[in-house]
Amino acid sequence: MQPLTQADRQQIQEKGLTAEAVTQQLETFNTGIPYTTLDRPCTVGDGITRLSTIDLEHYAHTFHQAMDSGRVTKFVPASGAATRMFKILLTALEETSNKNSQASFQELLSREKESGALENFFHQVKSFAFFNELRTKLGEQGIQGKNKQYTQHWRAVLRSLLHSPGLHYANLPKALLAFHRYPDHVRTPMEEHIHEGIAYAKDATGTVRLHFTISAEHEQLMREHLTKIQTRHTKQDIQLLLTFSHQAPSTETIAVELNNRLFRDTSGKLVFRPGGHGALLNNLTNLQGDIVFIKNIDNVVPERLVDQPNLYKKAIGGYLLTVQQQLFTYLNMLSQKQTSIDILQEMFNFASKTLGITIPASLQSQSIEQQQQFCINQFNRPLRVCGMVVNEGEPGGGPFWVTHQDGTCSRQIVESSQVDSGIEQQKSILKSSTHFNPVDLVCAMKDFKGNAFDLPRYSDPKTGFISIKSYQGRELKALELPGLWNGAMAFWNTLFIEVPASTFNPVKTIFDLLRPEHQPQ
Image (tube, one colour):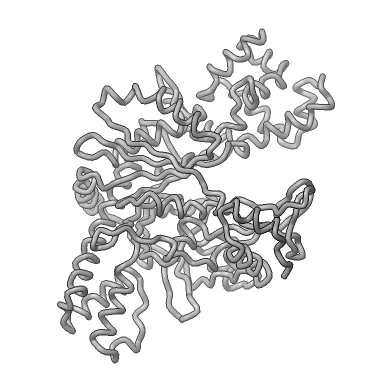
């Protein structure tokens, strides 16, 4: 392994990292990351619970007690710019910036591989919630609101949408883009999440607790937008307790050459890469929350469609509280040594049937004290309930029973990159998954004594992954930390609940905003 120079150590220290941590990352590149071993997909009745209508209403009612008492926070990963959302439009603009500058729109379409998408954008440009603001910017350039003028001046239209002094959408965070049109205003994902928070995170005093993880360079814009939209909520006697945090530089990971030697830029400095959404485990830990909902910034719908998704949010929250209450009852009994043989057997049944914990065959022959300690170790850890949607071809990880080295099995959310597709049996299990993960989860992050769990203790560092990226025209290997809802929560107690497809409406590209669920009626 290459030795680190004094300059390297100084650079590492400035990141908030240690030389030991970087050395461990370099070792990971050399040894590789083991694939996850799938046992079988989680299905309804075998790892996934389907709630009846009566259950749905019961758990939603149960949840209101925690909601009213102020225990609930909504956590929204919202870091990064929306550049990938506009990839097709950016490519068209960049490829013609220095050549074909006089190309007509029809000539552009004949050259562009994505011409169908580009034609669709200009044909439906008036359907986007940002259109009125874009039209104003174009009007300042003398371009009037007619489709023919827009296609004639297609380059100016794209510049006004994507760059400054236009709307600058390619560099704004998704949280601040106009997603949905209402009769008298438009809403951004940030505002839609606030409305969601009001529905299932408002306490009895009207306080709504929300937390957004954002990039430091966007914080001022986010705060200005919050000030602008907050007036729409003051009339409802709502008190928004909204906080922000940034992804710490100390969560970045070292990059290496394809031969695993240290990757350096043209000035000779080490290159670090973002650690992926798993880096947000630190933000989640620092939140010191109690009951925390996690949902991605781009998964929102207009207010007319929120009733069913919000009902399921409350239901999975109530389900979590019900299981948590049983765990706390057991843990209090265990801490006071009030456990008979019969009670311990009841705990083993709960561990197996509800939590999906493998009970070692040798446990029954161990002492009462050892059996009690086993239950304490299994029960006293963070708890999460994850919504799972029937798989209809959407991308994303899925729910599986995973086999560990000690022979035990547990429920896990697994991405395809974690599975060795070269093994036919593993590939077959992966393909047989009936559900996928829409990132719709609620977490219980305090123990039975009211203390916040140290979340990194329950992460599996062996579940990150290595990918090939490029920097300054050169390929490199990048290391991503265990994903926030994958390996970062590997040793939590995990429950899966089936939720309807209406809870999953992501906007990954600009064209997703043209789907019926994102359009006004």
